[in-house]
Amino acid sequence: MATHLFAAIDVGSFELELGIYEMSTKYGMRQVDHLRHMIALGKDTYNSGKISYELVDELCRILGQFSSVMESYKVEAYHAYATSAMREAKNNQIILDQILVRTGILVKVISNSEQRFLSYKAIATSEAEFSKIIQKGTAIVDVGFGSMQLSLFDKDSLISTQNLRLGVLRIRELLSRIQTETKTHYSQIEEMVDNELATYKKLYLKDREIQNLIGIGESILYLFRRADATKPTDRVNAADFKKFCERLITLSLDQIEDEFGVNEEYASLLIPSAIIYKQALELTGAEMLWIPGIRLCDGIAAEYAEQIKQIRFTHSFDDDILAASRNMSKRYRCHTNHIQNIEGYVLMIFDSMRRYHGLGSRERLLLQIATILHDCGKFISMKTPSLSAYNLILSTEIIGLSHMEREIIANVVRYNLEEFDYNQVHLDGHESADATILIAKLTAMLSLANAMDRSHLQKMEGCKFNIKGGLLQLTTEYEGDLSLENIAILQSADFFEEIFGVRPALKQKRRV
Image 1 (cartoon, helix red, strand yellow):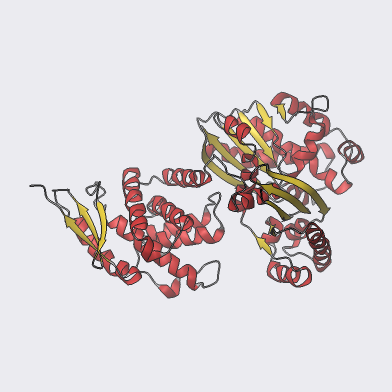
Image 2: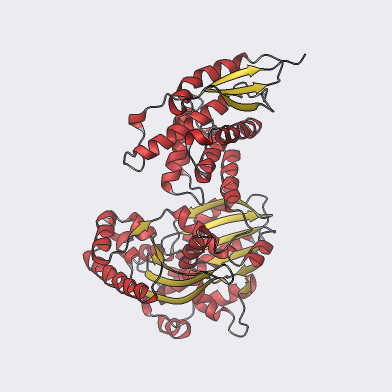
């Protein structure tokens, strides 16, 4: 039985964390060590937009110590991820270079959607409980230092996920500029939270019943130490949590430090955090709050354990990404029957062309999402639907996708109807030859699939695909008029052949 040692590093907005994990197929994943160091990177970022040299020096020093710990455990692999404070810092590139040069640790800045998806995977390691809870209307409330995320589930399916700029450190820094009495200060926090949540409710909670909240985030771990001291449980009902919050706001910072075992800096963040969870409970009408007790490091480790096949989830995360995409498509009134039809075509094209495109399952997923979203721009403009769709996709987080992957999808959707321009494809401000080739391949397949239902009447349903003599034969038994589809396929054929060296050709097989 092979046992693996893995290290997860979280470069957060308020603290650095190192988790050492032991992984095996027999016992799954367990944490063997955990180190934390408080460092308020977000305080600099949210105030000035840059992280100061003094904090960079401290950051490198602590990460150097983490590196020594990893060496002592002889870990086989590590992943180090940075979140919103580093993501929003204008000088993040030079800081990441300093970390690599001075500590040897390669830190990757992950998008908000990737960060929340990792936390979501960490929750799913408690599979029995997680699967049971999300059968009913459930919201995951992930309150971080820079922002919070609200994700809705219903009958095991992810309905939507949205990020709100309501992180506890961001709120504290914003309100610290206002000199008011303590009670007024708490009222201002409630007003700020309610204002954001009211908009969210109007857009996403209409006619939706939420029974359970899953509370995650660093601060909830400290809050829940004392939320119900007489019963060591991971659940609390809404009424008890409200009473707990009412008592919490009467305590001084010194009392909070003593009761929760935190320092003054952290104590000042617990009340904003508690208020956010309380207002989320009131907004949704949820009856119960479940605190699974996970950290981002747990999600990083769970992702790695899944990659090396040391754990296997029964819950399909790809289905959640697709569900979020379908809900976005629905929101922008896309033609459902047309999308379902060409989604089937595009996947058959992808599978038929495997030996020509050399792509894997992740690229197949990106192509499927691009297909689902390819028509969303018409909601904004019938005149420039491709450009509108491009901007919508870049402006909308899809949980589980990196920013780069969203850019790939947005470009595929854009060039689905526009002439492909190799010199105009830009990703995150940088040109990338590999990404441009990937976008070209996915675009060629989407354009052909879209052409096969040019009339939006699903005429070629049941079409067969066969590659023979340099041709991708599209054989259909439809006996009616396919003039529109034939013209559209001819229009997309040149680009398809340019990319793959195979030319699509329509064959109408008539019954005798």
